[in-house]
Amino acid sequence: NYNIEKMTKILKKDLDEERFRHTMGVMYTSAGLAMAHGENVQKAQTAGLLHDCAKCIPNKKKLRLCKKYGIKINSFEMRNPFLLHAKLGAFLAKEKYQIKDSGILSAIRYHTTGKPEMNTLEKIVYIADYIEPMRCKAQHLSQIRRLAFRDLDECMYEILKDTLAYLEGNSGEIDTATKEAFNYYERLHN
Ligand code: DGI
Ligand code: FE
Ligand code: FE
Ligand code: FE
Image: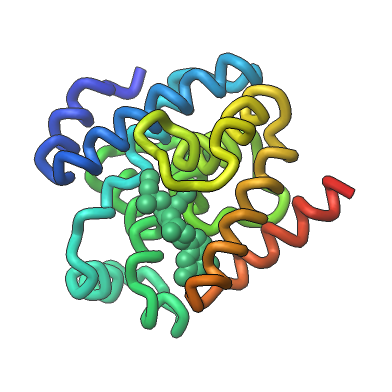
């Protein structure tokens, strides 16, 4: 057991109210997806709980912390520091929340961009982040929510497709990991 209660108390302080509610949603959605797909429920719950643990750190401080702890930052992350909450989150999960399980840390690490060939736990947290009950703005949410409990790879494809369309429409810069993830899951789909 990963002491969910203790971690929840710390997160309640480290996150703003809205982010905390989102976090609870991702925690329970990850647990539910783990049940549907035969993944370890406690691991999924813990990864969901901690996935945004670095989200409410101001961007400047994110950059400072990465420098301090030797977390490598590429120029893309330098220009888009919010993306660092995934990398920094994995670091804090290990150092502050004492998570030793590399699977949990990796699920936190890749929850924003995704990547090719994700394992079940990584896909579960990525998807739970997108479909948890508090989310409401994304396109096709009701179909994607149903798909999440049937086929994780198909669901990754649909989410990545909508995310890329959204980012392109927003003139947002796109990380290579996001593009590679899309290409990979599109190929699986076809
Ligand atoms: O932290 P959350 O808001 O719960 O969720 P998240 O960490 O998955 O971040 C979601 C946002 O990240 C969403 O607006 C899409 C954006 N995103 C995902 N991949 C990329 C990206 N933004 C940019 N600029 N580039 C990407 O490759
Ligand atoms: Fe996030
Ligand atoms: Fe996400
Ligand atoms: Fe999130």
